[in-house]
Image (cartoon, rainbow, N blue to C red; front, side, top):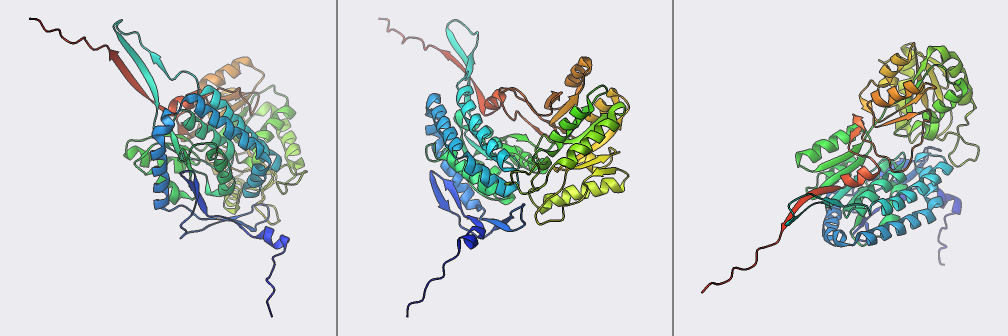
Length: 498
């Protein structure tokens, strides 16, 4: 008698964790050697969702070797052809935007619509670099008439790109595109917290390029350390936590390579006297609660002029209480879960400590009683500068509010602290707006709009928020090194005199 094979039902098969056990090296998907496994949980349900096999040091070295081998050919590739490859990559990403959106929502809890839009933004960034990257590549100097003096921009060589989990598509697209259009080859490591969407996105880009130009390794900090420590890596571009950025800067600096890093933030929002309270409340809510507060430029500190504080807080509580927390794929969800229980613990600890120290919780304030890593939108009043919720990255849906007696006091507090990524000022006073733009020592100052900005901008984060241009045309420049060339004609051969 022949045994009948067991057939897994579709429902059971769908619950099986996705296994990411390969890397992309020299144009091929290579099975991972194994040895370690990273397990990721679906933040919406608490069920195991993915198993990631990190790259070993040997596998990282092989990826760097592939990039090193490909770099001479890619550097010699005409810029127009490099731009055409990026346009093909953009088209591939755009065509897969819905699939990428679903993968990001499942991995990090970001709302499905926002996740899909994030993939579309990444496609736009790839196309933008394909255009702006064809600009000037050097300059001619005013030297002697008998010589030619120029300054050339040349690629670094092999670039390591290490990206975060919270907005992985645009972060990767911006750095990858800038590195590739300027003639560098790349080894890319997406965050292990968003390994599956990061892998799928990077593979789409790599598929539009010659073998070895973009290689992708999966893994955690151990994998990343092997990558940034490889002596063949000339530049490391990193977006992520301050602690990781510092470790990278130290490792890279010790061997004389260069680093670009956009790291943590504790962005302030200052509400001046005379603003419309309900409009201000909507701006605060947008900044503090979008993506469940898990954006590099989320609003984490709020300073409100005491003359409008009661009205602003009343409106903010109303907005927060109306937001619906639920699965990221549900049509009526306004806030999805946090990325995992580790982040949930950080948010909860900051809020509890603030309340214990005297802050008043006006709405929210405790994890939701349901499976998954859910935390409701929370508003705290009476926060002080010594609280962790005002000093350290919370990275959750918390609007921590301090009342101030004057614009000057609010501006001083907004400009304090160890981070310097961005800041927002809401004011009807043009003089106050200009003063804020001048005095706030941060990478980006936004006046009367918590998000926004024209294409083509560039900014350098300050202090613990990083160093080096994070985007825009100046990022393209940072992906190159300068070479001065002085050229004179050789004298004609000496003539024999008889």
